Length: 288
Image (cartoon, rainbow, N blue to C red; front, side):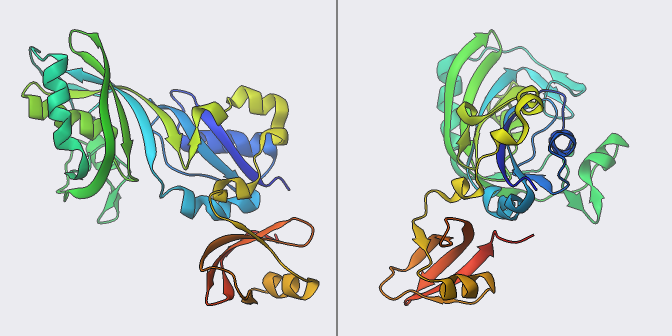
């Protein structure tokens, strides 16, 4: 059974689930999940977890993400990106300096109104399904955090490129829409490329064609995701047996904190938390 993490450079016009389905066929493994959905028009970093590594998805999807996005001013659409139907077009007289000055309003913790074209469910119905039928649902603004937001370049009279580092749940197309509203001319997202997610970058990403050629050889070990935590190796067969049965381990003198726990032969067993000389498992990564 293949186990591990593979960082895909998602191609345009594929859904994140399309990528997972393709990998299930290539790797012949049913247990495959991703950390952080990308819209079909978006490209870039899609961390995919295979086999037992899927147990790490709950940790990975919570992390910061980085995007490079195209902002088109003067165009407002129903989807808040260029794939949608135009609702308004306006003349644009915005300089790079004026745009850069507005960006500071959108850093830190901000409130975003989830777009109708999203997979969020309200009263059991996906917003995007309601939107496609021409309906609209009342939504409440949600807090998200924009850690970094900078203007990279101007690529046309009304086109700009932004770099954004943000929290889980941030809609970059909504950010582009809101920036356009703040400038008084409207705006939408013209392109999106994710350059970092779950601590993985484009430098580590591979294409689906490369996976087709090399298969399991491209899988990163599961513990790579938890590399920021120190390692602890069990001290005896008895300790390893206790760990594999889900029991706490005595680890006198071990500083409090989170650890990667390994077996005597180097197998990554679990992620554990140490407190008062006792190690308690947070999530196990051994077994079927």
